[in-house]
Length: 186
Length: 186
Image 1 (spheres, rainbow over the protein chains, first blue to last red):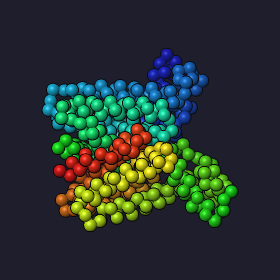
Image 2: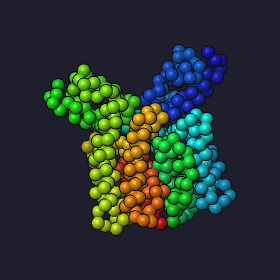
Image 3: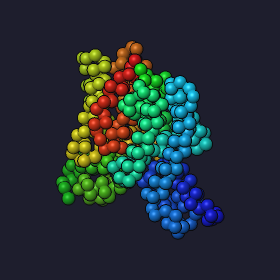
Image 4: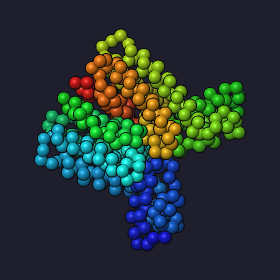
């Protein structure tokens, strides 16, 4: 067993990897503890439940992603360049995961949204807040002429194409996305 | 217990309802049998496994959806009208499910694609074939000027917006989709 001093962080990291790869329902607390190298008895010292851990995984994932989205979307560049960079950053992320793990995991937030929306109101509410934040970040980038509907369509386009990349286990399906998605601005 | 003569059909119907609502991993054979009013011992008389049943659920669902998509996309009407009808038919389907069950279930095929792509190669392969068929149906409707990339972007837009409708449990989020999606044709 590893050191207990960072057991909480290891549990969070293990849960993030497992849930991103295989979803929520197919993963148990015991497997998370094995992956984290933490005694199962310690789990409930740190988290009340798998749901509580999952909410922290979601928040940690979005905190990192939000920092990246904000940096990209508020850069000094024409709005189309910023949005193109946002789309290519998603392609890069899927490509890196494929290179390191052999599989395209898709978007953690969309995976959980489709799996859990009808099963867990707490998770659903948190994910809805996050997607609303994503849409608002894009809308702000679009400037005075950008509507919430157009911003939502951009995020929907991204999520739909990430679904195809995951289904095909092929991150290159995301390479040409911007050429299509930019038409949503016309 | 119900009549055994239609037990197979009842198992298929029950599995479709349960899996569409709550996904694959959280549903067990026992629950499917209770929902279908079929003895658990009979399950393996009809299906080798939950996976085998799920593949039949997928095929039956797509067979119905394909008939609808083909009818809409080959109708005598301008292509934009046909595509608008395709999009509004998806909104109608989500609205009907919400009215009858209280929840927006989203797209069965996308739900399973995100949940199972990294866990079940047989399901992944089947779903990929189906989404390829969807893209090809749209591409054919677009005519000589339609590219596979544009057709894929249309399906991605639909799936991304269905995700938002499921996350918000609000089918009305799909009402304005066509106003955005039609720009993908420009």
